[in-house]
Length: 128
Length: 128
Image (cartoon, rainbow over all chains, first blue to last red; front, side, top):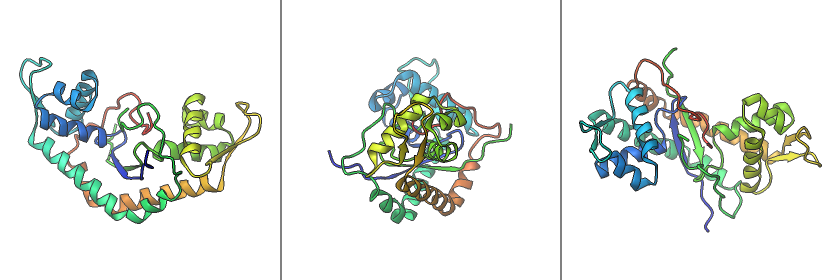
């Protein structure tokens, strides 16, 4: 396994209003057209995806995700205009932070071991 | 409760080699002089703190935390030179990312609701 090079991931807010896990879920909802399809596509439980969507919808001025009336599991969901705006702003912020800190990130890489980074359970998900 | 303003938090590596939770634990170890004291000071279980220290010690070229021989719970622990360096590099990187993205972070704040951000269980900890 190649060593995992450090990349920057940005979490916004304390507690987290937006981070890589939520951004990934929003993208999957846009692609899949439903919360259940999005959860499946990124290997997340439906319950967890639903709770994350519910949290985002409450935390922002208006909902980021609109679900079809009825709320069946396969009932369909799409990003609202605000959802699309939050997602693109978040991605721009990530890119800018990574670009402005490139030297520091490379310096950090030199301190890591060569064997790649073993993963702790759940380690990848910012919102866990 | 005042609205939680978005602040930037940086996670390094995929999976996470260093993030706010690990940095906080390293600082607490430096202050408290033991893993058990550090865990208590930041409200983390001893087991979780020990696992995080063990993970960091494996992920970097050399250990970040040195524990006293014997390994008793109260046995004492301190940051190594590398541990101190990783911690200060991480804090500098955080500060730089926040400074360079100040406008974007403020723009993001304008999209959040006014009621503060409800916390999901475990939401604050990057490594959960």
